[in-house]
Image (cartoon, rainbow, N blue to C red; front, side):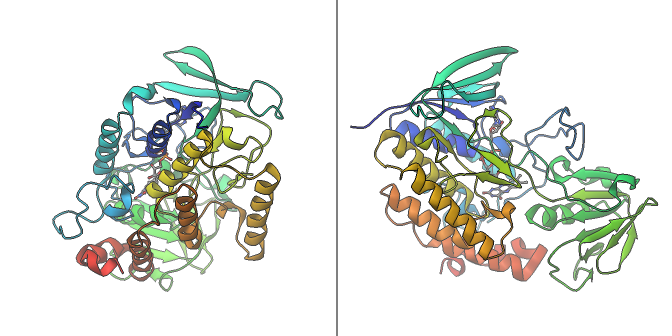
Length: 435
Ligand code: FAD
């Protein structure tokens, strides 16, 4: 018999919205807690920055969003939709729309998705969850969860059978250790607090990290800065000026910094810099979660069966959107379908021991392949198998292959063209990217 569960969902961003839709489809009774006053999460551009620009002070004023004003997606338009609710303007024949939409379009899309699926009425806005804990010992699996939240300065408590966590993981800055940094006199900022290039006028900037944000921000800030020096673990070009870029240089990692403001790179080059801008990613953070059997260790959230379920609490504690280096929206959608069906009893989970063995197997494989712990939830080459598995588990037809072909084309273009990957792909017809 199908079960309907009373479920607390934390977060009304993309993952919370698609999870809400899937849980409603399986007839669960849901409450979505959203601390801000609108849906969309990351995609709500917030011009404010935090009081501590590197995010070390735990008492700083916090801002959820990490978008900068000029941001365009790094996945192509068709990869920004759901399997049965495509992103706006996704006609493969239509050449009038940018393949990489601006952030405002993504927010419009998510708001339309929430409205079209009747989700808004299930969201408690301005409601920040501050505590989630068990109401009885861990071995009584079906005992309820206590959820405490603050809304309009009032504390509230309610009990739920299950909790689905969709709180995002791009708000808590992650910083590298740089020898000498304590006595370095310049300004330090994390990309979480980068919004526009203007405050960086005529400055010499060192950008640490060359993931998607480091890449894009270096080009954006170069419009105002005197020089931009990117320190990266994997040099795309020979160390030095990047071909085609006026004032952007690429180097090996920062080896150390001096009290006179000089920043040294492992390639032997050094520069007197005004600002270090860290594009070094984020840490998973669940400040409200008070449970025993789950830890965050060097960005490994675990143990989690297939990045979603806590083996200890089985169906009753799950996470959506923990994974990265993937087709993000589709991944959250499939994870949500799985959670909805596990809660209703349509799908069953293996035993706790079996789930733990699967987690251990993944950790062992990573160790053998020399992959660092902080990459635990990166899917990349595992993405296709993972999404196909989720689709099969939830009784969906096989995922159409164009999703993966387009994602591969994107990765190849990123590797070949560096900063220019969007321009190159904008020129290509979709038909070239679908095979
Ligand atoms: P979020 O969007 O972060 O939503 C989490 C929600 O939870 C927020 O609304 C927050 O207010 C709420 N919340 C958190 N804690 C609590 C609490 N305690 N109580 C109540 N509410 C709470 N993805 C792509 O697919 N394509 C891209 O091009 C792309 N570019 C990106 C660029 C940047 C700079 C960043 C930071 C991310 C980018 N992403 C991109 C990834 C992006 O995070 C996902 O697309 C998506 O927003 C993830 O949705 P989410 O719901 O998991 O998290």
